[in-house]
Length: 335
Image (cartoon, rainbow, N blue to C red; front, side, top):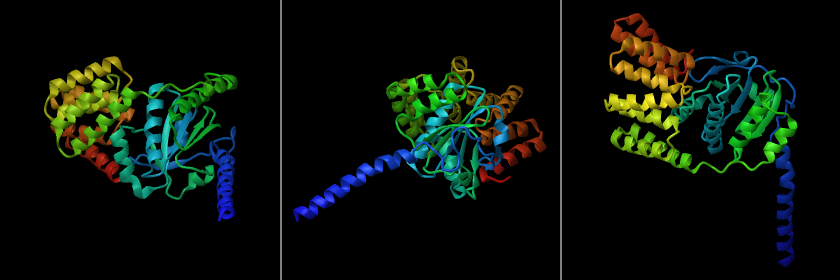
């Protein structure tokens, strides 16, 4: 009995020990592409109906996050990448999401809406790009230089993901050399933002309440989110949208104007302000803002829908129908 138990014990220890180098070998690399090699080109149908192609990002550093549906790590990676690239706010750094799970398109749309992460999202139904890269784990984050060369890979998601992605992205942009890269990676990442974590919890609760039509309760949750983290632009924009739903247009406009004054590069604010101007029947101002928001692409479905409402009010029925049709196509993921 003792001998058998001992054999089982040491076998388990051996498996655990041997698993460590295997895991490290699999982590942070691709099977079919080595560091320094050119990222293979891709052209994919977009989640919002607009095609996504590598050539659209020529001359820019690129972060591609390949996701799996209904996987907690992938959800974290989507949210984290959106946050990091948004905070860096570099014109020569772009973010693209991708997945082969076409049947989960509705899930991914709802996830993006909940997180307001509306960066380009390509669908890879035949796993063509997946195969070219030789992906090993999900999620996988691929960082390419402005020259289109693979510079870094992050396999999975961990508490250090945002810290590492920011450093790798800055390195891909050429902000510092290999020696500085190593130094920054060794440095302890900043402590997790407890205020933002608390705000996120309130914002998630508010999202559920909005879907149930419980707008007063949603406002209370979003007020608590903003109180926890006054810099949280997505929570402020959510709050302004709910206030518009309640016809509290003045309160919504005050919130969004304060946000735009503090964070002028936050694109979704123009979309919400355009809706406010539409509600006030300030149609020329609304048209300008909504058209700009469509170009900036924070949420093309809503931008097209609100432009449809605007042109319907103007009596320009042909233009209204075109925008309603575009909004519907993106909802249905049709070309």
